[in-house]
Image (cartoon, rainbow, N blue to C red; front, side, top):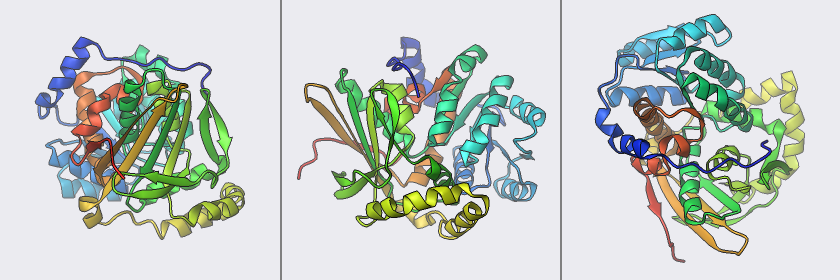
Length: 382
C-alpha cells in the first residue's frame, strides 16, 4: 500500500527520440546481452523461441540442468543452471548480462532474490508477474534501482502490458480522473505456471483500490455484464496486477479490475472460496490441490496460440461524471507475452530507463500497439 499517489510521468524529448528510433538498433546487440531465467517453463520456452526468431542469442537459465541442456541444443543456445538460493552464484551469473528476463514463477517465491541480485550486479530486470505482493516489493526498490542506474520493469506480459498501456491511454484523455475500471477476457487456457500463481494468491482473497489504498473485497462478489469488442460477457472483480501498476502509472486512486468468467463461476467462488483459502495454506492439502490443478493446466495448444485473441476494456471517470473508455484486442495471451517480453527487452536495452517502473512508464503507453496482433477500438455500437 502507498500513502500518497505517485506522480504521472512524461518522457523527455531525448526519451521520445530514442523511443522512435529504438527498433532501428535491433540486431546490433552482443551475444548474451540478456538472460532468460525460467526458460524451460511453458512461457519461458515460448519467449526463448521468440527471441531466437527475432535474431537474438540469449543465455538460457534455470534450476534444472537436463531440461535446459535439451532446450539449448534445440535452439542452438548456451545455458547455465543455478538455483536462486545461491546468492553469490546468482549475482555472478547476472553480472555477465545487461538484462534478465525473469519468467520463473510463482514470483512470490522467485522475484525477490533475482531483483536483489540484479540491483547488486547493476543489471536491468524484467519480469512477467501479476502478483500484487511482488509488484509492491519491486516498486519499493525504486530508490535502489535509481542509485544503481538500472531498470526494474515488472509485469511485462499479458495481462499487464495491455491493461497498463490502455489505462494510461484513457487516463491521458481525462487528466482529473478519479476512477478506473479494467476488464479482461483472455480467451485462452492457463499454463501450469499461471495456475500455480493463481493458487498461491488464493489465501490473500480479493482486493480493490479505494482512495489510493488497497481494501479487501470478497471473491465472487460484484459480477456484472460488460461489453468487449466482440460481445458482452460476465465479468468478476479479481485482484490483478493493475491494482498496483495502474495506480503507479496513472495516479488514479480508485481502481477495480475484472476478469471475464462463466455465469456459474461467481456463485461457486462465493461458496468454495472460503473453504479453499485455508486448505491452500495447509502443507499437505495445498500440495494435493496444486497437483490436481496442474493436471488440468497444459496451457493453450499451438493452434490457439496462433489464432486466438484476447480483449481488454478500460474506462476512467471523474467526479463530474465525465468518462473516457476504449477497447483493445491483442494476440492470444501467451503468444502476446512471448512477443512483448522480447520486444520490451530490446526497448529497455536501447532506451535505458531507470527506476522501478510499470510497463507504460518504461515502454510508453503506445507500446502495446507495436506488438503484432494489437489494435485499439473505440466508439463501439450496440
